[in-house]
Image (cartoon, rainbow, N blue to C red):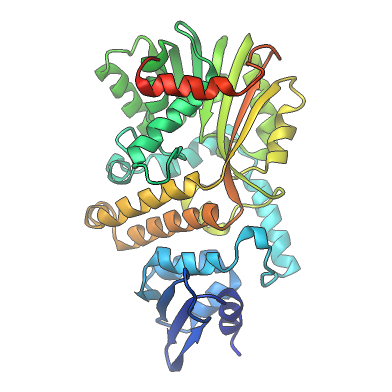
Length: 411
């Protein structure tokens, strides 16, 4: 039996995957099962199977991108969903083991890649966030929130869920008018502008993306608040001053494990004595691990999703008080579902911007990420830290109360 046959026989137990290959009869893996897909694929050459067995994620991605793995029934999301739903993280299914040599090479490569020095940080950020503005307009919400939304109801529209995410974070920050806020990794400025609009706080947003900086500054000028909401192209390590609050959404994944202590020490330095910070990051529910090869090569060079234990080790020597740790499990899967649907709907425009190969890459990325949150070991952590044990109320009631005020427009 070919290795790819063995791989697929182990991977697909429920639902069916039919494979067509050159010079071989079609073969179906799995059995029909309610809730599981029925997908048909075709390899255009014999090398596809070898590539997938060698590195399933990267091999399948590149075969799809290059048109060597063609999905004839279903789509990229259906294929990934079928494979990942058969192997949920909590069941701990056994996988084909990588060779000791390959495991060693991967660990060394990831260890080197996570030493995210300043020049590498800027280059890594530009790789992803300095893509065409038009691309992000096509699949994100109108505020360009490129991070996990917060679904108070899974049926909510993406715009509502992203607005609720901002309210949820603002509530945990315990903001008051006149406070100074630092937004580390401010993106296109949506969070900073929201915090000022809703609470009157003055915000400094810092980013390493030149394209995001242009958009954020333009938005502040257009809103007439450029004197209250400022944006700078600067590494967080070079920020000076004192801030009442610090917020960081979707940036910690790019810090690098070697720099977690430095990150939290810098936040401690910048926070006022009664200061509070809220960090929102993708994380892994299991122990420390490595970033998959596809993500490192094509999506987030230098990126790494931390285990909760790694986050804790990062701040535990700084004498910051953990005030609240929340685990968002399915919220990012639902967010990515919206992004995938919008990307597919905008296929012609994206192909015009780039090409078919890029479109297939982007849909593989979004579908794979959604599956990792739905069936895999990824989640989102919101970690609230303070310099004083008295800076945060002793119960969590204030969060819901503040969210309700923010949603009603009361601030």
